[in-house]
Amino acid sequence: MKTIDALNTSFGDLNSLIDDAIKIDRNITLKNVFGQRYIGRGLLEEVKIKIYGTPGNDMAVYMDGAELEVFGNGQDAIGNTMNYGKIVIHGSCGDTLGYAMRGGEIYVERDVGYRAGIHMKEYKEMKPVIVVGGKAGEFLGEYMAGGAIILLGLNLVKDENITGRFCGTGMHGGVIYLNETPEKYNFGKEAVKAELSDEDIVFLKKHIDFYSKTFKKDLNRLNIKLFSKYVAVNKNPYSNMYCTY
Image (cartoon, rainbow, N blue to C red):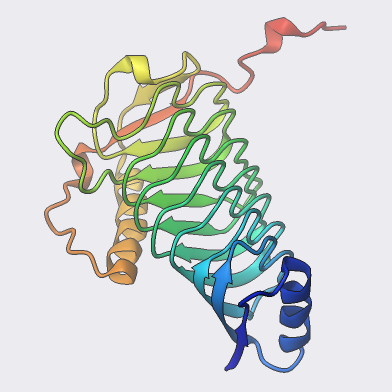
């Protein structure tokens, strides 16, 4: 396994070092990462990177199959427009996690900021998944067009909401699962509550089991059947705003 010390290294130099390293070794460890951007951009399958520290904005942008594991927190726009692959964050993340994400999986141990899952989409077998162990900020799943967001809400304090206001605003596809039934005022008018199906239960169990094993959490008391499911009211909520011919 190749180890790269990122201390006092610019983001451009660090990414060049990674590019050179993967030509020799597909397993890389990054130490002392402190805000360097674009780590893992466009990386293909069979590349695995362990990151110790805090990667900067747009980690895994356009990623195409690699696996990144972060031992620390992440900044904004992690997983931006990623196609395939897996991201594991042993900490929390900033805003716009999974922006326009088109495939792959992201697991965050604790909390995420505003607009997580914004513009997520899916196509045929490409169905992205975001699993968050804690809570999310406002506008979760904004303009969501596909994929799935699972919000576990672990370790919430009394009267704390699992997500902020305007969840699902502009939503026209995909699904959001919440381990809570928050008041309707938290949701945009484009999202509506739906009944959990047997397929939903299987789907949730699969991803929650991975979360539990990865972060070493005992979630046996978690009752998946009590999760709330939200979907889009329709697939084209703003059709009346455009001219037709």
